[in-house]
Length: 269
Image (cartoon, rainbow, N blue to C red):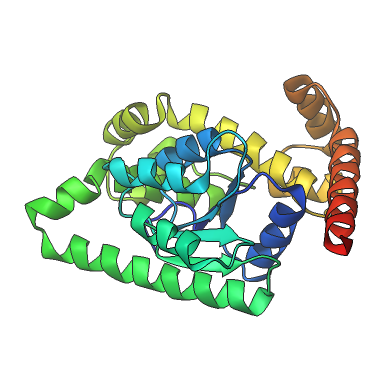
C-alpha cells in the first residue's frame, strides 16, 4: 500500500470538468480530493500530500503556473508530480508549464482513455520514487518527505478507507507501527489539530464531494461516510453548510448546465 494519503488532487474551477474527472477517478477506484481555486488547492496539497495533482491552467484567483511554482517551492509538496489541464495547444504555453515544474499535459475536452493512462503512469512513477527514497535511508530523503509527514499520510489514507467504521486511535497507531502520542504529535504539526479533528473535517469534506459530484443517494452517502442515519446526516449537513444536500445538488446541476450552455455557444462562434 502506498504511503500517500490521496491518489489524486484535482484543482479546477470548472464544475463540469470536476464532475467528469471525479467520475473517472471513481471508476478506477482512485482516492481523490478536489479544490475549486488555487489557494484552497495549495492548502490541500500540503495537508493531503497526494500522489499526483491535476491542475487547471486558467483559474481566476491564480493561474496554474503560479500555483505550480508555489508547490515546487514548498519542501512538503515539491516532490508531487503536476499534470496541467488546458484547452490550449500553443507550444509556448506548454513550455511555460514545464518550466514551472509540470511533468505532463492533458488536453481539454478530456478523452477518458488519455486521462486515465497519464494518471496511471505518473502515479506508478511517484510510488516508485517514494519507495526508492524510503529504501535508501539517506539524509536527503528525510528532507524530501519527513517521516512524520509520511506517518500522517498513511494514517489519513487508512482512515479514508475505513470511514464507515474507523479504528480507535490506539488501533490506528498500532496498525502503523507507532503509538498514539507520536501519531498525535505528527497530526498537530502537519494538520494543526488532533486525529479526531482531522477525521471529522475529512468526513464532512468527503460527504460534500459525494453530494456535489456523484449520483449516490443521501442514504448511501451517509452510510459511506459513517453517519448513523440519513436523517442525522442531513441535519448535520445543513447545520454545517447552511444548506441541505438536495439544495447543493440542485445548485451544482444548474451551474453545470449553464457552463455547458456557455461552452456550446462559444464553440458555435
